[in-house]
Length: 495
Image (cartoon, rainbow, N blue to C red):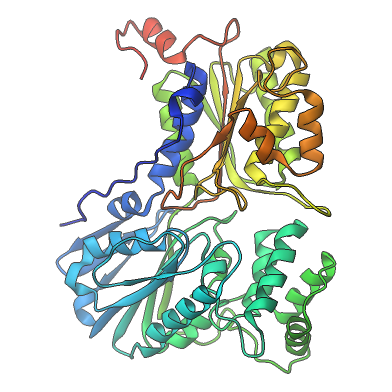
């Protein structure tokens, strides 16, 4: 049995030494960075895919497995989209080599490949380059014949990057609608219900183009609940949503969509435009299309949990499905951390609370600069200051695993109970922090305070990842790993 050579999934954090200025801060940073690295396609392909002769075996994140005899096909072609699609294609190339007969993926993080064309696109708002790239991806799928296998590589960001507007919808219409939805506080499922019905490839339409070829989709999930129909807007999955659902989303959030968008959606709801293919409909009715999720938020959380345990901290995964307004989710995380610090519940410190999922920000008029993870971190810092002694020794790291929080150059932020205070040595006053939150302008104040985490593109996307480190009561400088070694009679120090 063979596998790909090791790829380097390492993440570099700018100004790492400054961020990791004490053991709890270092641990918070290491937890989120290790989680990102575990979800990199290079690591995922090495763990989840194997090649024995010509038989490709896929071990999915849910414990299921599937296999394909590549020799049974005339051609094997690769299509895909997402922030990590280029890295994914490169890793699959390393595994399958000349068994791949060509293909195309679209991404905003290009890498060198030999057999699969890596095409440009933009995220989170689609671009003309992305439209042309998406059309090329569709053309590769449509060219596949009955005796071919189409391998789809789908990752977070694919919805914006695989942008092929439906007939009658201009890119500007699509971009305007996408921007309004992103600012509205709509969930990713709601946003994608609209996107699918404005697209020539989303909502199962790429699978329809590839038919009658077999299709095997491999997905790195960035959505809460890992619904394949939501990941990258489900280009290779049946679509359970309808034109009527899309119209309802626009109505729910008061979106004043461009005329072309409104006309298409309302026409579709009236039966004047063909629906996306749903469950049980062609091409999903004959077993020729299979979607497997090979990595998700749990992949990152498991790796982060192992780091915490190795350092002698008790890890607790709060949820892989966190959602809602960023500032409110931060208050909940801070409250659990304070309870842990104060009374040792739900776990005794030293501890690390972990969560993943997708928090959102509902923007008002004239919003400032920032992203959900920066807003989460700033809100948490305010809560820790307000908690007094119960907030001491708590560190919060929150970032988007693709390295891009909102539309900024930061992945997120790392804060502790010392960031916000009205004391003379405080980097940020309570008033300034509260004003920044109200204006959705977290980026400048966090940047001035040196709290932003910058990684650059990470090569993956499994959505948001957070680590909340609660130091042992009695001092923030204590290190869990050292105490664990002492209790166990060990001599190894901390990393």
